[in-house]
Image 1 (cartoon, rainbow, N blue to C red):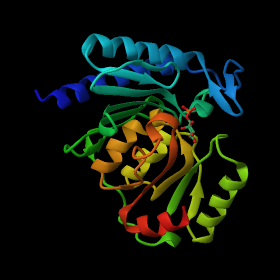
Image 2 (image 1 turned 90 degrees about the vertical axis):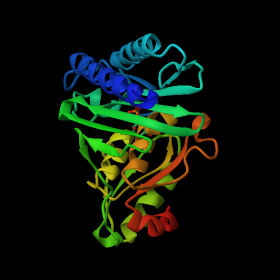
Image 3 (image 1 turned 30 degrees about the vertical axis):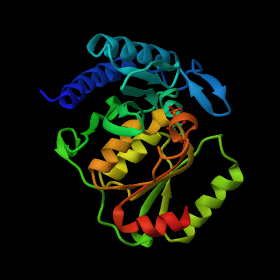
Length: 256
Ligand code: IPD
């Protein structure tokens, strides 16, 4: 089996197991278990436990590969590197919500090679590997054919890493174009839904590599247009991201 196919298959198995673990550990609605890492930046017991599980199991399966996780940073280096967000959408998860996922990306230097995003509470698994197409629950997905912003639905992501003034100005510009706005609290799932054609764009002024590593491979394979997140300092410090249905990429880039 091709080395990349073998890794994608293992990633699918491990992300599914990690998703089941996250379901077992999910706080009840109303729970006060979650802690704040920063302003509106949540972490739960499951974030660390799921990341350790994935790190250990990937080390067993591919001892030569590197590993970088949201919670513990760069743990191992290697030509190929797994970039993991154990729970993306922690603000939803911490309150017993359904919109969260395990995100497992595989990169070679700055190039995304493969990605798996498992959203266990809604029974959805997005996956892709370079040159192999993108799927949702095993069925091929494509970005939408939308060409006009007044018919478009755009998700915007928020983080405290950029000013509220800049965030609100971006919301105003997007609404001014006639596009509908939404915000779902999981960057990885927001991007995956652009790949699946369920929404037309995802825009965020600053997001980290672990939130987007898996989605970058999925978006590219689904024919979406994606800003070059890894060209500058995206891999080390995070960056802005814009992913779009190709027919609105020009208009959205001008707005962004
Ligand atoms: C966050 C979510 C959120 C996005 C933030 C991320 P986390 O990740 O993806 O939607 O807007 O930029 O930090 O904390 O849930 O892993």
